[in-house]
Image (cartoon, rainbow, N blue to C red; front, side):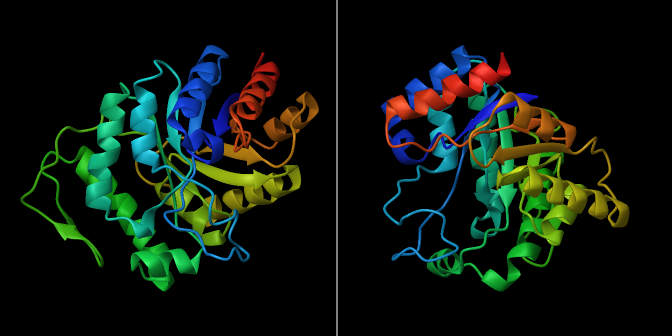
Length: 279
């Protein structure tokens, strides 16, 4: 089991000094990865299913990870997740390739379709088309990162006669992790993802999602060149060794406890508790 820290750009970690201290502590403690969250805007007032109050600070994932790339040397840097249908994937491909180059090939690209309609409305992205746009945008990222002469022709995006250097440091590209708990998200992960990410899941929720992924694998063809689907989970509640074993028995490869905290000390305690489980 590998262990990470979720929320390196949120809450107290939206302060760059705090984020740097937490990132350095996580690397020194032997954690494998740091994960960002994303909401460009949040509904005000907060109403379900909005996850946090609207005044919660979120640094941009790519900007945050580029900053932390310069404060760390080994730990992986992950987006968990970028809301892909709200982004122009051509621009995003450049931003993420830049992070991968700046970090020396440590980026993990987590993406998902999103679920907050007010956020989509605010950025002018069509909520009803978010799934189809997510699928196509993943293909755009891969095209720009791997094709010698990138070209793409789809329903939402098209280009040819262009190039985008530098390419990512990782070859063929950084791993792409697909988030979400719907049947469509499971199918997207199987068809297009190097991995799948589930947020705030207890073991019952993780077991349900593992079954959903297995069902999708029986009906959806895995993309050419993709290996085994790696499973990452941000667990719900406090972990202990028995819970880690239960997640592991479900096929989970990586656990990323929530480190969104009100202070540096509280975030560092999450790092220490997680490192103790990893020892």
